[in-house]
Amino acid sequence: MIIRHYEEKDKENVRFICLNSEGACKMTPDERHFILTTYCDYFIEKEGRNCFVAVDGEDKAIAYILCAENFDNYKKDFLAEYPGRLDENLSVWGGNAREMSTVSARLQEKHKKNFPAHLHIDVIPESHRQGIGHQLVDTLCAHLKEKGICGVMLTVGGQNLRGQAFYKKYGFEHIETDGDDVAFGLRLLG
Image (cartoon, rainbow, N blue to C red):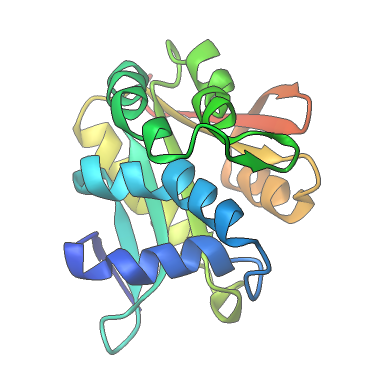
């Protein structure tokens, strides 16, 4: 297993991992479109320089870590294009998809001063518990430190206890819980 920068050739594998990191995807086509638009495509299309993949011996992505390094830039660029990719009448999980995509990063905005970068990480199930997530976070954190970025954060679902345990063990601090979103942050510079 090797970790390297994301490349355009990784796009379909990264999108597959995004939808199948908890097992075979059981989402509707609309839900898949929402997830990819909101949590994947912006990062690989606009901030690929801040994204890394773990690849197997055949150079196929089996895990990724995606990152927006500056929340204000992310918000400006994301809002300019990505919610518009969702049909204005599209409803997912009982809410308007466009609206849900624009508020999906409310905790990142609230804590952007101390944690200007935010990440998304996923590993395909057959590669869980092999230290890949830890190595991906190490790689991203080293990259962000080199860029002088003071902190990185993420949100995880309240029911995702395995994910929460991983971030706590790594050294992320619990910042806030808002509804079903649990925010964790890691300070990178003194």
